[in-house]
Amino acid sequence: MADEIGGTFEEFSRTFIESVGEAIRLAGDLGEVVDYLIMHILAPHIDRIEQKDGVIRIDPLIIRAREEVEKESRARG
Image (cartoon, rainbow, N blue to C red; front, side, top):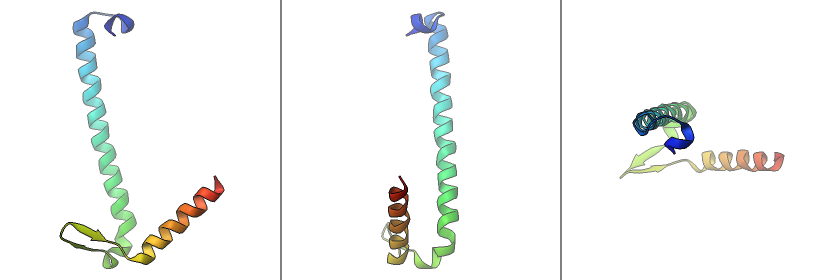
């Protein structure tokens, strides 16, 4: 792969490791964004969500509403 990119193996190795590090940092940042969005979406319904023994139970009305949104989304294509 170093031949394809150009440069020495040492340069390729360093660049590859830096790129992997950047990808890992970006994945972590994406995880934070997803956590924030989930908290924002669930915040108004927090009184309907309970957690016991590591299991999150979500009110069936919320589940049905989500299924309806997904159904409409699929219908629109």
